[in-house]
Length: 452
Image 1 (spheres, rainbow, N blue to C red):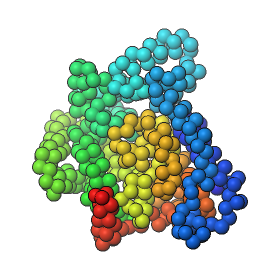
Image 2: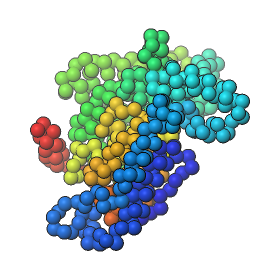
Image 3: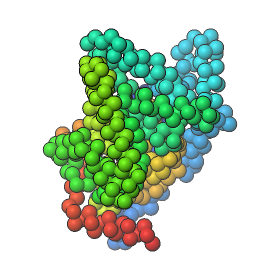
Image 4: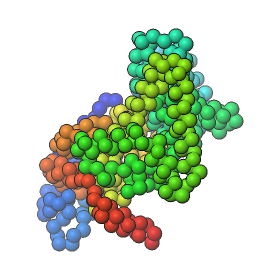
């Protein structure tokens, strides 16, 4: 077993969850001497039954899991003594208490938290109000000033600032589009909640409502299947040319592909809306470009081009590993990451399998949902990684560095009996390109099972 790395920047739930999984592995190592008759084909026993080992044999402690689930549930429950809202990305509330002068913590931080909990839709999400204040006090005035009085130094600094904000903003909006808002459902707040993206989205590289129509109304309907415009099935996921084709198609053709998808599905209203919002945003950018071309390049065009690439690099990493035995399974076509960039700074985006299992699940609920379904994750051969983010998953795949990816794998269930080399080979198999006949057969079979 490779070493489990605990970054000091991991969130409190991630530390608890990773220790839970490490505890399973250690317990399994202690008892596996009694289970030596194992076929090395992804951990299946060689008893002749052809059935996988009982998950309980792989170190899972029901008592430990129940205790950890209780802690995580309390962490999210405003009525619990263990409740802790998220306030800023980089520090937990305990860190703020330890690092700030007592007078600042007591007379600034605590009153702000108490007020913000009434403004946001979920009391855990003080962080989202913090970020909205940040964006409206930096991004928006900076962009306005660029158009009023442009300088290249300001343009470069503005673009660098937006680059730093983009990931966190995108995953905040990811919550927004799934939950149809992030602020409390009061008239004025709801009005602001509805319309602020029309100001901030273009500054962060998003076009109006395209994220909603592509991600919620399309990607989660198709689930990386054959009709998903962002599906990875038809690509060899460790080949650079395939990766470039994948990015290029989205980059240049999504304005056309998405409306055509809706037309093929007979959804005329969605086709019209998605085309209208995408093209009207282009028209607005063109208008701003005519007003001040240099300011528009740094404030609007640069973020748009960067975001389009970033979205596809992320989606490639999220859906690079697809089990050929069951490619239509959310457990086997997406992954879970326990890492700092995805979960501390991007609203638990690492829990991608959990998100596909329930797209409306609140971001703070992902770790506890994982623990509650841990046995199912193991039985379904789900993949869990640590100490790596989606960007580096993509980079390592294109380098064909499966040894590194295997070291980052946190084995669960039957995967614990694989050697490091066997884990690397398993991951390599999961990046294989699917042929059209194979797709037709396997997804037709999946639809038949679902319809029963």
